Image (cartoon, rainbow, N blue to C red; front, side):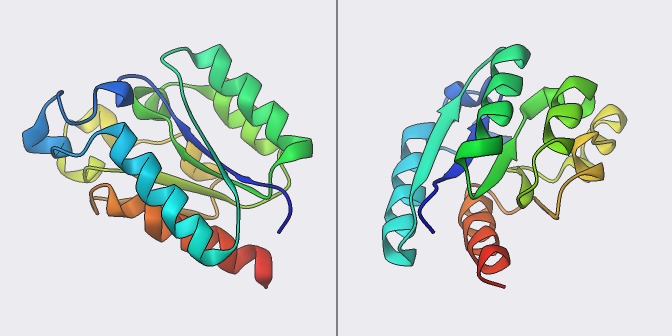
Length: 146
């Protein structure tokens, strides 16, 4: 797989490890990136890990992935529940998309139960902590191999 897998993180994920550790844990985004890069090496694939608090930037990266990525793993944070723009961009991407949430969004506030992204995702991983990113990476590789 010559093209990297994009791992996109949305708003407030830059505060991972500091923001509500009782919900999101103590691992930082840097820890997640390091774990994903390590697993990617083991699997023989590349990853490009990106984070933005801005919806338009996430849309731009999804559009960039159209020609340059083998797949997308996305934790869009709060934009999961609000962004038709991110959904539209993902719908224009032809590779596999896996949606990740660190917490179980279905055990949280009612507004978090709906995901626009799930309508496009080839898989959704919720409530597995930051290990969900590693599950997602393995799944994208599996989908690309099959």
